[in-house]
Length: 309
Image 1 (cartoon, rainbow, N blue to C red):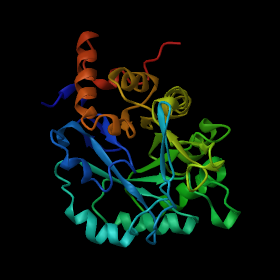
Image 2 (tube, rainbow, N blue to C red):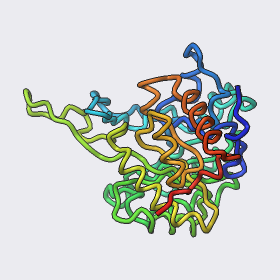
Image 3 (cartoon, one colour):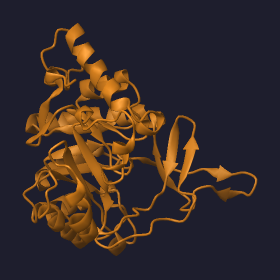
Image 4 (cartoon, helix red, strand yellow):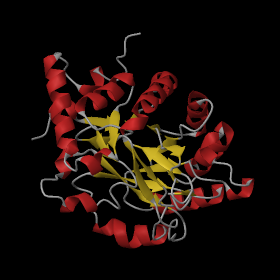
């Protein structure tokens, strides 16, 4: 059953619920359709797997390691390449049931722009830019950790597409609000807040890194307090520009989702939480709808950014 109070528009896209399934957790949109009880009616959008210009085999194993209240992953952007995704995978998706958001990754600004251009000519509804990638031309410095470099990526992508651009902000930087401001000036229409934090794990028996890539991205409940603060900080920049935010990072319960919305998120992203519970989306929708009814709120938008401080 759909909840009318939850339906909204995000960058011009009509989302039937505020739930967005996050990139890297649901493949290219078809994985969860095989789960008994899953329904596209429970989600507003799907962020497709990170895509680069050329196919990538990904990192050496181990790629995933469970940590207390979280998970380290270093998949390494394994994907079949942008042309394969656009020509072979996207035509198999049902765009009538839900919205699909491409996720663009790259190792140079030129690669970001070219992948974005290819997706601009496809049926995807919006394009998410993963700026947490290393810039090979700058000795491996991460695009997303430098506001000026982040803005250059957004500007390059903006020049080749009219589709909404959602910039995925990294928490591994000094001032996330500064970065958001520069990305808005460069043409970003929305933000995903946050990407994973960098971490590692060590096998004490062998004294070697457990993750084959040595370091990986930490996700799950352990990062929720950090993600919540970052959403709040970015919202302070976004609210005067009417720039929406997908809040994400450790959401596994209805209360988690409500916290992110109150902090300023117009939509909430589920990732690692889906591994705990593949049917989490419906539970969160039902819980948010109950909260709105209980507090006599007519629509989800009344709750967004309602933090009293």
